[in-house]
Amino acid sequence: MFLCLALSMASRPTNPKQNPRLASRLPIDHPTSGHFPPLTPPNKVTSYKYTKRTATMATPSKDQAEVILVGCGAPLRGMGWYHAVQMLGGECPSARLCHVVEPWFLGAGASGPGGAEFAEFQTKTSAEHMVMFHKSLSDVPPVVDGVRRLALISGRTADNPKLLSEAIAAGCSTVYLEKPGAPTVAELKSMKAEAESAGVSICMGYNKNVCKYVRKAREFAASNGPESHVTFVSNNTYEPTASSLGECFERNAEGMLKNMAIHELALLASFYDVTVDNIEEVVVDEGFSSLQTLKGPSGKEFTDFDKVKFTIKTKTGKSVSVQADRCGGDVSYATVSDPSGAELFRHCMPDAEDEGNVSVLQAKYPGAMPYFFSQDPDYITVKERVARLCAVGDEATDIATIDIAIAALEVGEYLTGLMKERLSK
Ligand SMILES: NC(=O)c1ccc[n+]([C@@H]2O[C@H](COP(=O)([O-])OP(=O)(O)OC[C@H]3O[C@@H](n4cnc5c(N)ncnc54)[C@H](O)[C@@H]3O)[C@@H](O)[C@H]2O)c1
Image (cartoon, rainbow, N blue to C red):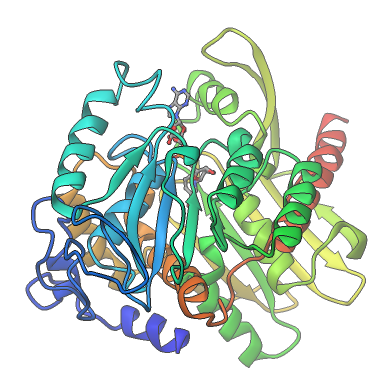
């Protein structure tokens, strides 16, 4: 079914006149227009038989999860904001956004940068979609009998362990946890234990697990035979200057391998059995990889990679490569090569089919983070699968588990040490 969903999304027209899904992409101004597939309008208030809700609260249908978005962030900037836009636009039929918890913009950040834009978003979203806004998860009303509650946690990574505990206390049965989930492996492991003992499922927001270029490369490699070698290439658009990279190093102080390339490490853990214990050998491309020590905006120095390339061979006989470049541009891709290194296949994100969708979204949300648009269908797919798991118990196919997140972060910590040592020689 999920494959069908992915295929149907892939084959939809990208002209908004042909594609009602794109035409309905202004949830604030056009809250009930043309959903794809048809579903209850997001702002319709139902008298759900199990609830004692007031007439001004968004209410999930019996096939929907009641979503609490934790960490909306600033409009156009925050990942959480884009998750909200997709749910309010009816893109995830199994997810009804009912509550937004925003500690910063409803607290100390209200009068700072982004505060006014957040307030405007709150006013419109409350009025048009009956979503309730709260400063803390403890302010959310108790879950009512028969409702399946999902927390989508998209806050700052360091706050996640505390937010998970609060989401469990708020009666959530499922948690969608944005990557990487926590700053350290130790914290992720204790979050896993806490969720397990509360009977709560955690699904990770590793959207590259479901994205088209990864799927196409894996499919090609599988059809081409066991000699096929896959390389995942991830690029960012920083300027190759000390000030641009210094700002990047400071803002993403956990380091490239636990931040940008963590998506690829999650792919390796999900599909190539890569764990620290199962690594046979790491071959570092020392000609490509680069470690720099640069000053951030605070004046403090940070040592991090601006480029990495490596191949991991596992004890179970698999081999896969990753290349990540902070200044590589705005296209990421995967290749499949033969044993001589000759490239047999490449698929890019965005591809020609995606570019129409990207242009439509750019016009609708000018100034928003560019990656929202190229990865838009993948964010929808992950949210819908997690919401369906929460609402009706369907398996969340290919969605990364917390075990995958632990394995990926563990590999990230291991590789950071190993590669720093090799490149410092
Ligand atoms: N899957 C993806 O492709 C993807 C992409 C980007 C981010 N993410 C993840 O999503 C999560 C949120 O990322 P983001 O970029 O939206 O983060 P963000 O820092 O912009 O916002 C997250 C939260 O931080 C708080 N905040 C914002 N500004 C603050 C400030 N100046 N001081 C203190 N708190 C502040 C707000 O409560 C906000 O909701 C992270 O886990 C990140 O790794 C995932």
